[in-house]
Image (cartoon, rainbow, N blue to C red; front, side, top):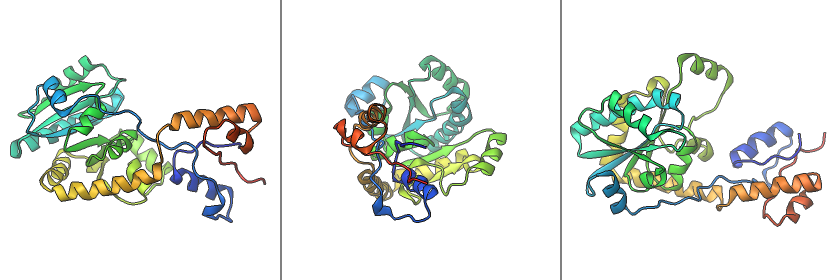
Length: 273
C-alpha cells in the first residue's frame, strides 16, 4: 500500500494500528484531508421561511432522509409519522432538505402518498444548509449529513434503517461502537442514534420533543459540536487532498514531493516491512 488520504484522526488511528504494533501517536503526521463544510446558507431566516410559506415565529424541524430514493423510502415515512405525532402536541413545522440527487417532484409526490396528517411539511431542494441553519432540531439519516449538521451546530437525532438482510449481514461484517459519523469521530455518544428496530416514530418524536423542550440540552450538544470542529481543521479539504495526490503522481509519493505542491498537507505512509 502506498500513501493514504485520510478523512479524520479516527481513520488515521485505525489504519496505523493495522500497520504496526509499536504505535505511538506523536510519531505520525496529522491527517491529510479533513472533512469540512465550505458551503454556507444562502438565505436569511426571513427569506427562507417566506420562500417555503412557513411561519417565522414557529419552531422548525429539518428532515434529512438521505440522498437515494431507496434510502428515502426506508426512512422518510417514519420521519413523517414522527412529525405528525409532534404536531399533535407542539406548534411546530417541518422542512425536508431534498438532496440534489433526488427529483423534487418525486419527493413532493412521495410526501403526499406517505400522508403527514396535521403536520406542516415543506420539501426544499438545494437548500440543505439553509434548512439546517434555520431550524431548531434536525432528524438526520446517518451519513455525511450528520457531519454537515454538526458543523452548522444543529442539534439532531440520527436515524437509519436498511432491509433486514442487509442489517444482518452488516452486523456480521462491521463492528463499530457507533453508527453516526459524529459519534464515531467524537469517540463517544454526542447525538442520539435510532437505528433499525429502534427507529420508530414514537422514539423519534420523543427524542425530538425533548430537544425542542430543553434548550439547555441543545446547547450541550452544540458545545460538543464545537469541540469536534477543532479536530476537523480548516476548510479546503478537497483542494488539499487533490494537491497531495498530484504530488504523489509527480514525485512518486515522497513526502517532499507532496510538500513541494505547497498544499500545506502531508501524506501518511505505511512503515516499511
